[in-house]
Image (cartoon, rainbow, N blue to C red; front, side, top):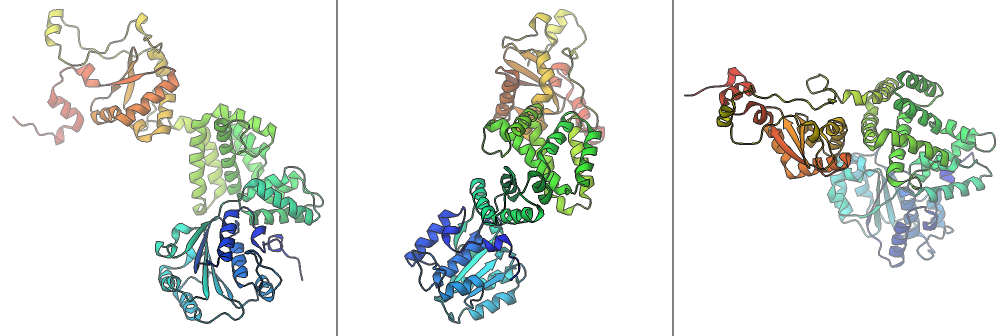
Length: 530
């Protein structure tokens, strides 16, 4: 017999050999011991986590001639035939290629035949979510009331695509991604049995690449053993798996921080010439950004980040320079590109323009809705327009009832009792707006038509442009107000309440309502009635 791939050679043959799904193994073993075997099971979870292996072990155990404490003996004729794939009582069906109603009708006709050797006929339908709706409907009645000698085991990576009527007739088990420590322990066992060796960090790299799928991890290990001339080194592992080295990821991040677009293009070109796929660079860089956020939020000693000590230090330093808000925006952009990558024709161009675009993201966000740049924060408080000077007695008579007129505070009154000045608020306003956008985008949108106008004690007066009453009212609502005031306190270091005012309240006084309507809606849509 020729060479057998490691993942096939190490396929589990009993419940104890399954890694990372102990609660499912224990539940099924108890059901077998108590003879409480269901007529239909649904195994759902990510690829490579043991769904098909569990199905075969269950099929083998229920047909074993001498089961031992809910485990197959793996020695009787039935166990040997099932292990070798020769049993006529175990039917494996790939729903991806047999997804029509005709295949399901054939199953319905065959379920009435009794088993040839064992106690049960077991139908294992892999990737069951690929069946058509007509096929599901044809399966439904058989699945609901199958003959006593039939067991259905449905396996899927996308349980959300299975009709609720099917799920409700099955015992469902959700398979989890396998923990890195358990995967690394199994890989070490396989490595030693294969009489191979690997440098420190190689198995951790393979586990990281596998993303919780043990079958994938074993296949990657097999690939590394074949590629290496002797012991597997970190260098050969990176080359065999097509991964981006951590040094390259740190360098890419450094170029984004330094706004070195030319250097970024050069490094991307070198990575692509070395054989790394654009999609892999994108995914590895996403993981790199995520690790920086984890280190910032969870601390340097977090076990969620698998990396060397020196690499962690560099990632933490870069994370501090970028900040959680920018990192989150970067991840949002790259995740969208990654999800759309299957529709992209030239991923190299997409990757280059996306990463270089991160450098200029801050600049793009300063562009207003009408395409013009937002003005830079003023160094000194801007003077508000005031009405023409009038004699005191006339002004007193004409003064309308309502909010006080806003004027520039005197020099000695610039600082409020809370220690926050208007100049400080304006200086930090772009940063405050970014934080509000991260918390709630709609609140940010409502604030784009206002600007800080005055600080009164612990109150910040926000001046809204004429005609944007709706935006003002929305900012004053409970939830939006709470978010905005929370961000202000976080960025200014002081408690700060907001007070919203309209521009016409301060500049126009008792403006003519007809003129206000003309300004808002234009003359062609205004009808003036006597």
